[in-house]
Image 1 (cartoon, helix red, strand yellow):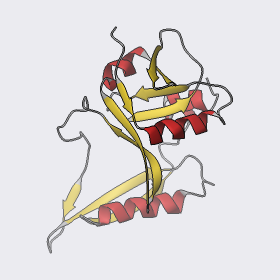
Image 2: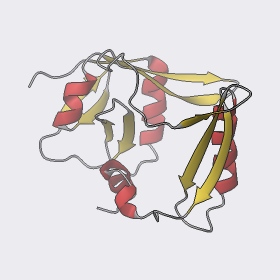
Image 3: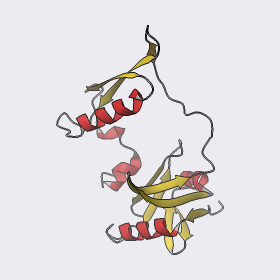
Length: 170
């Protein structure tokens, strides 16, 4: 397999190197999901990993992610709404995302959307914050009702393998 090309800005390279200093010695890994969502994290090298050198920063890729990252650009941006990494991936499909949505038409026009969200635990302190965030985003285009539910119950099987690896659960 050909080594993928990853373009990384100086700001992103510095941010990753700063984070690596606190990562306990694990190298930077980048997983690119089947839906082309990037997940950078620090974790041990695995068999079959592909190492990409980005101006002195090594990024490890599993073989399936390597096929999806060729040509990706990574930047680190800071702005009034916070800071974070920005990924531009030319391989990402440009069509509409496949989502399931049921919007009920309202008699006076427009639509109503009902959202059911399951939290990780009944005591999760972020429930109201996440509920309000979802409501605010959808309210821009439809009337919305957001409900926190406990069925199906959340468990660790709902975490990605990358998240479990990052938390030392594998």
